[in-house]
Length: 244
Length: 312
Image 1: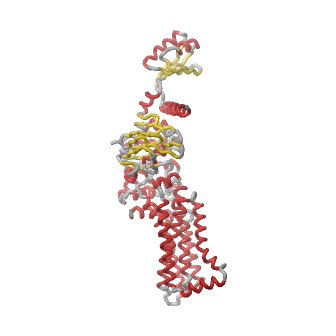
Image 2: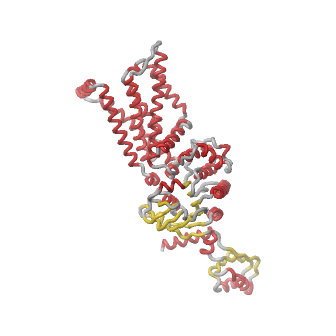
Image 3: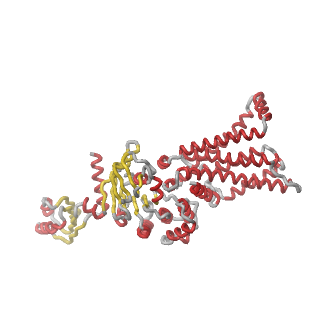
């Protein structure tokens, strides 16, 4: 099954990287994104881009953004372009198709985020290094990697779920955009909390060890990722997809 | 062992019986035509055969495997071209075929050789690296047929492969299909409502309407079984001559269109008796010829009879 998963994932990535992504955007789109997040923003932020813990939020947000752009297409797109039934009529097992799609989205989000992280590191060193090598603190580098994998997994799991149910790619993309907004709800809600409650929450987090927070978030993300994959497996029914 | 064997296979969608007690045997190595009007249950039948849908009742064995329990074994040994070509338009023809070769775990060298083998006779090998969204519908359909054969399947399902193609592309694809089938030695289960196509390609045909199999056999068998031998007489034929032969026991049905009589007879070998009787009653005959009905007529008769039964 592993070979089959890689076969499906390989085709998905080939379609995206070699022929342009499902929204019809060319590889130039990727170059522009790398330019903005790998060069422009690090230039504006300076050394803070590498040293400030707040950057970790950016590394968490980025993969969700990248993955949500492509994962909506995974099943809704195949259905819309009438390629799904031919795929379902092959020898591939349900899980090989499903995990292949998930893996492609996850790898896309993770690799693109890591590439931008590397480019941004080079940018900061070239402009602000002054002969000194600036590196991400080990905890941040690890955090960025783990978060980008888990957030990519979250977006992939959610995206496949949405794509399985959506009537069209556009509908799936709209639902994923809503998902992106939901990610920001806690931050927005925090602004509107009564000052006493906001202070209490702030104090709670300040008192906590940063490692504890990261660990907590990682555990929550793992649980959500696994739950989403479980739901995806339950929803992936050949006969239902055929009749849809 | 038959390629396909079904017994009372039934599948409903709500109150609609899409496939109704289908009992069918398709021997190996032939092109079998499954004829039926739109919505008659052809595509649902293929989906049942591939285990993509479960039957409500009855059973089917494809290449000896049970569709309920061994669907994956079936899909491993079959190639399928369903309603749409199912090609990835952003990829090239070679990439599309290569992907399906990978799905069937073909080695890289084997895939490359197979792509050449399949695309060269279709005159598409030199253009194999072009993205196929640039291609005509006929060319895409040829690649889709090639894709179904990529992994050397034992049985191929083709669901209306020439639907939507212009006549030239249709004929070209039909010829390619015929030569590919002969070269590959596969069993082909072809659904169509193009009767000329079925007549030319298929060793056996089955006629389905409203989910029910109405007849099965070779096109020649069906013609002789389901339609009366027919006599065409052209000339100056007075009405009294027509009235006289109406009462002749040999004549089942008679139609007159201007100077032409079309007679359905019970025995075509005794047609000379009719001609003699017409001449004796003053007919001046220019031309007489006899023939059996074509498959289209057989098909229309069967479907019409079934509709009448359904309404009754």
